[in-house]
Every structure is written in C-alpha cells, then in structure tokens.
Image 1 (cartoon, rainbow, N blue to C red):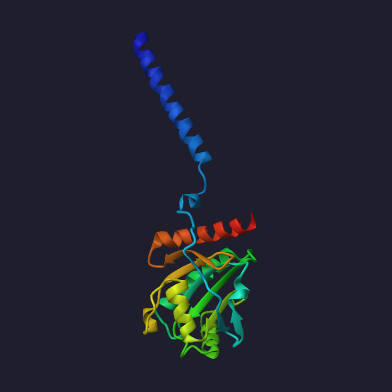
Image 2: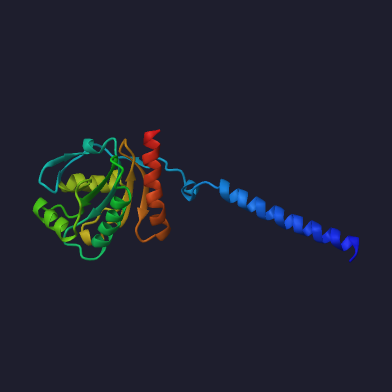
Length: 203
C-alpha cells in the first residue's frame, strides 16, 4: 500500500472524526428549542375590567396581576370546539401545577345565556379544576371590548363562531402571544411561552 494512499485515508478519517466531535459539541451547547421562538413582544395591554366568576362573585382584572395567564373564550352550550379548548387548558394546568404564579381564564362568548349556574354545570360536566382556573361571564359590552381591543380576536354575534385562540398574558396584563389551536406548531410553542414568562417574571 502506497504512502500516498495511507496519507489520504488518514486525512479523510481525521476529518470525519473532527466533524463528529464538532457536531456533538454543537449539540451539547445548543439552547433549549424554546429559545428559537420569536421574542414575546407586547401585542396589547388588557385594560381594567370587572366580570362575574363561576360562583357569581365579582371578579376584577386586578386579581390577575402578578400572574402569568392563559386566556380563552368559550360558551357552555358548545359541544364541538369548547371541550377541546378545555382539554388543552387542563393539559396546561397539569403541566404547570407547581407554578403558583400561573392562572387560567376562560371568558364566555355568550354571556346572555351563560349564567354562573350554567357555568358551574359546565365545570362539573368537564371536570374542571377551578383552583387556578377562573371562568367568567358578565356584561356583554365589556366582553366584546376585551375580544376586539385587548385580545384582538374576532367579535361574533353567534357564539359558535368564537375564537379558538389561547392568549398569553404576562404579570402586567400585557398580551405577549396568541396561539391558534388549529396550528400544531403554535400549540407546541404555547407551553414554552408560558415557561418563558414565568422565568422572566422571577428574574
């Protein structure tokens, strides 16, 4: 075997080994996948509001300050989209069960029919844990304003056409992201966004 052939073979082998070492090093240094998400810029600010919770008690937006929140819209007679939305909210609730500064909020898109009693029945039907999940109803004008101006989702006359989005709020009640349940990649980013805001608020 010629010395030239051995030299070429040795060079190729060393290059291959070097490539493997480099790849391993880059993988070890690679940040969490969530760091590749777009920055969570402020999209809007939620203005102060007062609604009514599932127990018929007044609920002020002040109660949400200092917490990272995920908000969605629903209505109690919904048999299609809403149970799916609630299931995703339940998954988030379990995923961040140890985070005392995390809260879920569901707001009725049909406040005329969604009385606290009807919401309580919806909670029981879907086994919703309300320890850190508040379901709200109340003045329709306030809810329409929240939809249109603060959460920037479509306002609808027919509640069956309500948004499928999850709105992510920081501790100052600023909306930082909006995730459509119909977008699988967005749903993968949702828990990463929650985690980022939880960590952000503790630094």
